[in-house]
Amino acid sequence: MNTRSSRKSGFTLLEIMIVVSLIGLLFAIAIPNFVRARSVSKQATCISNLRQIRHAIAQWALETKAAGSSSVQFSDIQPYLRSSTVCPAGGTSFADSYDITDVQSPPTCKKVPTGPSPHWEPPDTTQ
Image 1 (cartoon, rainbow, N blue to C red):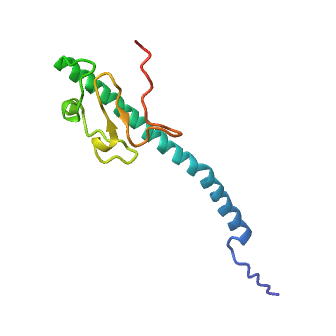
Image 2: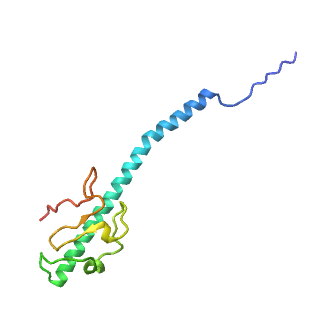
Image 3: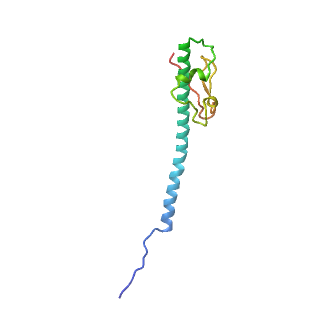
């Protein structure tokens, strides 16, 4: 007697569906975390830029002996900035990213000034 078993090896439909549902579950958990991490990263970069701008204004005011009410332009502080300072939330230049007025006022972000994760520098409490 010669019995032949013709069993094909492979995955069943149920096994494939379980694997696909597990992958979908992992993506459903991971994607919101990636989006949140990207938002937090943009916020941290913008706050770092605001601190750099504030320090550039302070250095310019110290070197030029400007009063606290003196107005500041980007051309005044540009030599004190290390690189192009642009808001990562969609800014293309300094002018459409940040707003500076005078020496004593902190710089502000034009792109995300309010909302769930605003781009603003907390007040300095060390003084």
